[in-house]
Amino acid sequence: GEKLMNKIVSLCKRRGFVYQGSEIYGGLANTWDYGPYGAELKQNIKRYWWKKVVHERDDVVGLDSAILMHPKVWEASGHVAGFNDALIDCKNCKSRFRADHLIEETLGLHVEGKSVKELSEIVHDNKVKCPVCGAVDWTDARVFNLMFKTHQGVTEDSSSIVYLRPETAQGIFVNFKNIVDTCRVKLPFGIAQIGKAFRNEITPGNFIFRTREFEQMELEFFVKPGEDMEWFDYWRNFTMEFFTSLGVKKENLRLRDHSPEELSHYSKATTDLEYNFPFGWGELWGVANRTDFDLSRHMEYSGKALTYFDQEEQKHIIPYVIEPSLGVDRAMLAILCDAYREEEVEGETRVVLGLSPVMAPVKCAVLPLFKKEPLEELARKIYHDLKKVFTAEYDNAGSIGKRYRRQDEIGTPYCITVDYESLNDNKVTVRDRDTMLQDRIEISKVKEYLEERLI
Ligand code: ATP
Image (cartoon, rainbow, N blue to C red; front, top):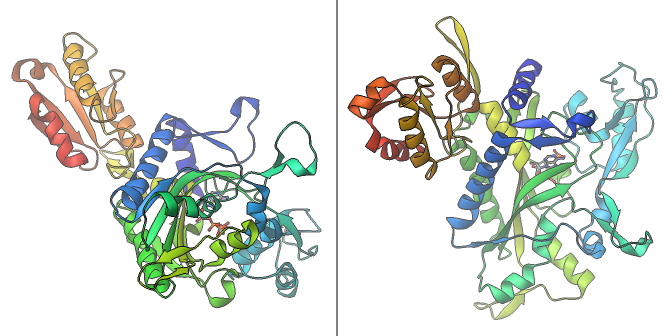
């Protein structure tokens, strides 16, 4: 597991997917910068989600709300009082852990709904061993709020405190009335948003799996009370189909329903779509039935009526909401882990990212067999034509074998090779990343050939 993870991290660095953040200054721990291919892959993930969740549907609209919000939002949402994690320290080696993660890792128990005191007791009563030094001597667990706090304006008085949002969801709830009043939506309907979120995580790690700055793709799907469990099941299944439609292996995915004790106070039902990462199963996508908790709280705190007029029943109701919430960075890690493979080819190891064509950062590469004119002239012409339709690369450096390997490593589905024959027969060789089989096709048919296979 660890070995595979190292290989993926190293490929990400070597090929320009993910770099250490602020690297020239020694790095800022647990921050990551997405390089050219990483930026493309991330955009492909977001675009695919937006297509499936917004564009292909009649019942979801998009939103792009501000990161900084009125401080009362976080009182209403419960984040000021309740967005706490329990910290616990090993008295021997001074290592610090999130109590729930420590319990999950060492005892295999899910304890999301437990109080700080209960978490403390679980660690002490079970004589949990410190994963770093093996000691069983723990401090009491104590509370830590995960929100990043900062100041708005030039003075640092408390009235100007603002938080960086720890989730995008609240931006959706506070715009519920705007959408209902301006967009002619009818229940059931959803509001979707993609954006950055910030959490001062106690134990970030596992590469881009858990960071303090990350991106979320969240949908709040509003329904009539009574129809909520039906829709909960619908979105629960949706998450699984989303990833299998991208070719992610079914055996690496599982839906884990939260037990009643594990449910957060506002949730009637929660399921996590989990992925089998090299470091173990981890949450990818959380689906929660949040009932009318959020809208009711914002009504209470804002004094505004966040209701919906039900034509059939001729009365105002507070809708229930189903929330599927997916992390962009985690989705990317799962997609990378699933796609990574090594193969023996003629006594050599070939590293391949078997990415779905929708996800591949580069769809095709044009390679002149030799760095010579007029071969290059023809190759460049083909490249410029394709570039209008697909993300394409031109590579004339090094042996053809090396160039194929490089494209295999970044997951490029097709390589188009231009050779001396091409000058006579107007044909090129198209190589398939996975089968490595080559087709000889007319230059005028290349675009069509790729379109059939890539879209
Ligand atoms: P965890 O238990 O892993 O901390 P969570 O239950 O707090 O996650 P949610 O609040 O449900 O997570 O957030 C929804 C989604 O946002 C998660 O499923 C995950 O994909 C993503 N996410 C949450 N926290 C982080 C983080 N620190 N880094 C990267 N992605 C995150």
